[in-house]
Image (cartoon, rainbow, N blue to C red; front, side):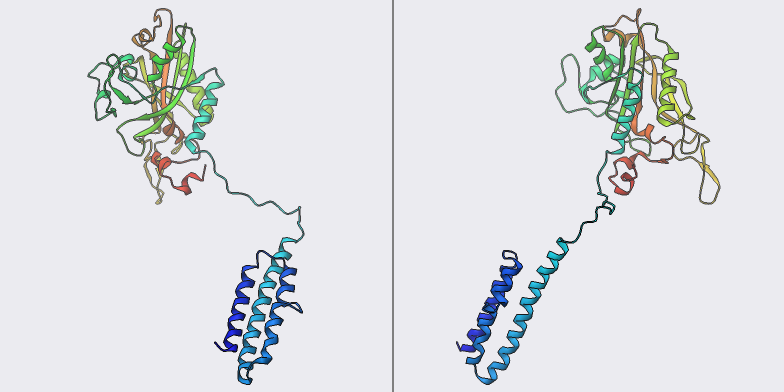
Length: 354
């Protein structure tokens, strides 16, 4: 190897060493070590006199580029230090951080819980995977009831209990009724609100196979339908707004007698049943189709259900209601949500609105 080639190799090593030490030495230390009077660059440059005339010209260009690279590295460090020592202006507005929030359904559950707690209801929790007895039999449903059909209910592949029957994914929160009666052991009154996940074989713009329901149960002396209707009206105005109307329609449920379907006026179409399309023409409201939105069932607790819970139906009466959280939430004024499946679509543009 010639002396010229040896100097070229030394220049490459010097630059590589400089780059490795950029983050470990201070600006002053680097400046002295590499560009100082007795620094490594000047030591290397002093060897140029030992080269041949034509080699001196070529190596001079190498030295010029090397010095430029060293100075560039030192200038970057200087700029970073200047930026880090800039004056802090405490009067400048802060930078808003992007933070998450509760899912809209979780927000609705919290609001519903607080509404009922204000009138004396106590939040309770019961199994989401339960036995046939609590989901159906204890609620006065016979063995041939349509709700027990596999096209309606998700059954769990599990050995049946000798007394409680098959295991199912709860189709409603009403399985908590008899469980709550058993828990209090006739230490009445009961004012219970149960909010939980439920499962049914349905899926369209107003149904999902997994949904949330809240169940209210009141058992005491002298309870009547006026108490039930008053509770429904109170919830409607607290949750949806003072102008919201509610109605109950006679229906048939095995676990209540008399039984009712509960409707609230639709917030999307203003209770008219119609919306105007882009051509300013009336068309049926896709969500309610009638101006009213059915949210669930309600009624006076059937004597057989009270009996299954160990309560004397001649002394005590009660009422119960069960409504879907998602379907109720879609009636919130100003939301205009016409498909509850959006809540589980994981679309950030939709979820970030709440």
